[in-house]
Image 1 (tube, rainbow, N blue to C red):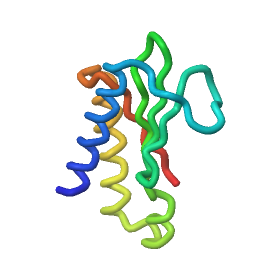
Image 2 (cartoon, helix red, strand yellow):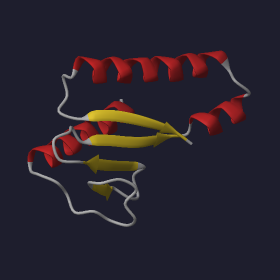
Image 3 (cartoon, helix red, strand yellow):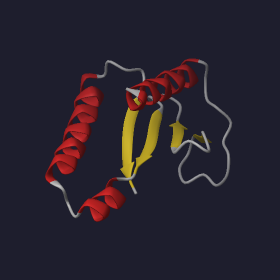
Image 4 (cartoon, rainbow, N blue to C red):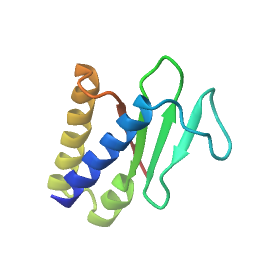
Length: 103
């Protein structure tokens, strides 16, 4: 339940950033627009004019797979998570776009 709450909090925060305009950029920019890091959380928000803000959050997919030697229930959950996020992005229900990044 705590993971769902964190995920929802990040989505709401990113949506608010998109509603109130572009945020100030921090660090080196890799593309036009701005980037906000929510450090120490593994979440970064990218925004560009005329587009939905992108919330990129890192998940320890590769590390967990190495630790569990590809335990099938964990791999099934990971696949399910990416499918749900992909379906959410396609429906355009949220005012943001979610992008999980495996580390």
